[in-house]
Image (cartoon, rainbow, N blue to C red):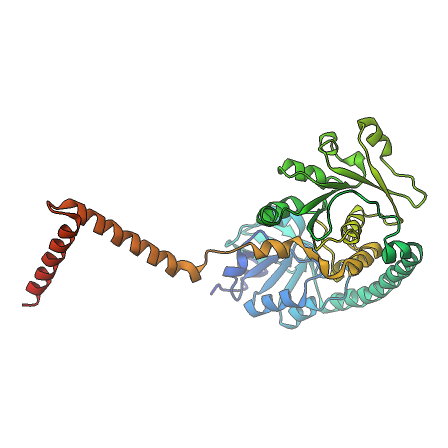
Amino acid sequence: MSLFSRTADLSGLQGTLRDCTATGRGYKRLRAGDIAVVDAPDISRQEAQRLIDAQPAAVVNLAQFSTGAVPNFGPHMLLESGTLLIEGAGEELRQGLKDGKKARVTDDGRIHLGDRAIGAGTVVTAASAEASFTEAQRSLVDHMEYFFGNTIQFIHSEAPLLLDGLGIPDTGATIEGRKVLVVSPGEGHRNQVKLLRNFIREYSPVIIGVDSAADTLVELGYQPDLIVGNPAGIGADTLRSGARVVLPADPDGHAVGLERIQDLGIGAMTFPTAADSATDLALLLADYHGAQLIVNAGSRFDLNGVFADAEGATPSALLTRTKVGPKLVDATAISDLYNVGSGRGLAWLWAILGLLVAVAAIILVVGLSGPGSFTDNLIDTWNSIALAVQGWFQ
């Protein structure tokens, strides 16, 4: 257990630095009295409780414990446990962070390794945490009123599309009864596609590339069946790859990027709608044409994103995913199904296999090494072993 102390020579709380960010492994070694460094904007109750159970002396957050987007109880829980909280330490600390090194945190929120400052943040007090919580509550209510007001407006304008598929083009691609993979250009989409390679190999889904994610698919060796998005941000080779191209268009029919399509000499269909997201159009298109299952990579959507006003968390996205309903699955869930670990549960199988191989090798060597036939050599060797063992016990 690491020690936590105050000294006269070096002021502040002292302990061992533990990198508990997504890229670090500090959580595994976090002990009472350590200084935990996290990257947790709007820290959740679950993560706060995990820290409380480890009993660190201080928690330094590279981000803000409360950004003001959502009223979260995590900071209150940590403060009530007697943990010193420092937020907003940022990239300076990330660059100087060395897991396992002795460090100290001063009253003004500075983090030191010896006499050298490696970062600084703001000390969180009970008063400041309560003020952030109250402001976040007001902000959340205002945001959700605005969000659902826009949702009602979208329903008014796009009810025919959502109810009857009015305006969805007939792409000519065979989608009915098949699995569909929709790849959007969100963070981590390239890695998600890589992790889906077994799913793609097994089911040969219809592949729809959204905006620049179509280029990613081609770079990874996949041929998209459909491309949905503004061609201005898509490579010419990808557009000429043979995929059917669907252009999002304004309700009046005007489609941005149509000139590029005409210059390249390829055909395209327009999809008139008030929705701004090409991902939403791709999902609606797959659903309307009878997809059995729709897997979406690169466009995560959840309630937390709506609360935090995240990019892509729009009324259109909410209604689209509600429309698609049980057909829609996030790519992470699918890739997890194919992720079979080689854990300790299978170790005994490998041990038995190794033992059988060793026994087979011994039998083969013994059977071929004597002057007689294979069987006679085995019998003679066995008799010799039996006589030797009998001699030991006499």
